[in-house]
Image (cartoon, rainbow, N blue to C red; front, top):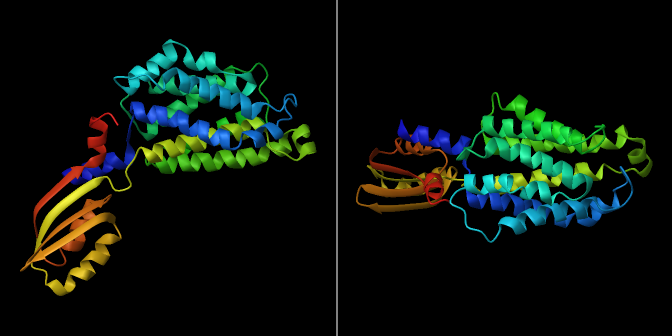
Amino acid sequence: MEEETLFDKAKKTIPLTVSLVKRMFNEIREKVSGEQEKIDEINVFPVPDRDTGTNLLITISKIIQAIEDKDYESANHLINELLDKKYILKSGRGNVGKIVSAWLIGVFLVLKDNISLDAELLTRALKEGERRAYKAIMNPKGGTILDVITASAKKMDSLSKEEKDLIKLLTEALKQAKEALAGTTEKMEILKKHNVVDAGALAFVLALEGILESLQGGTLKYPFDVQFCLEGPEEGVLEEIKIRLSEFGDSLDVVHFEDTASIHIHTDDPEKIREICQEYGEISDWTIENMQEQIQNRGG
């Protein structure tokens, strides 16, 4: 059925738009900025210069400055400019900035020619980011930012074979990264001595949080606008119908006249709405619109 196809697409893909890419960098900057002093304070490796948070904040801010006031035809145009004009490469500040820049370049090299994100694509992007992050370091060590980069990429890779929901996938990858972050303390004597986690690893976890929040902001919780008439229900059961439908969406409107109810709802499960209402009468004039696709077509 058409609505099931639309539902699958909305759950498993996220439009790759200009606003999403810009929002991603802004969310990363906000996350790092909020913890900048803490990151700097625990920065004891590779040297205790207390600037890891500052350096990543500068790195992301310089990327934002390069793109924030420009208009782009598409996310592909924006991403290709980031790569071709080496905005990401040139923005990297300090050890953490260089590693995160390498990771971002890997991610965007995979994404650059696509119009939407799905589980397979995002998994490949994180794996390429991981590969380039390792390549950027002469002597990779455990107990560092590389631990969380690897943990998130491996979790995405293992789960994406079954789980296709991008938000769930990245949420689990973030959880795995946080576990790896906690484990950095025991992997390096200097971290254990000061009883801290690795500052670069913490900075990367915050960046992942920002990316996750940007993707959550780019998807609608209830992407389908469903409208239909329900013929047959008595007015006395309308409240029961409302209560049951409200569990599966919002923006619920029910107008009753004689033996027919006109119903409107935003939902992520149109078939459940149909299933419930068929218990009370006959459905007619069923229409469904994918609001997520409408946003995508507007370039938002």
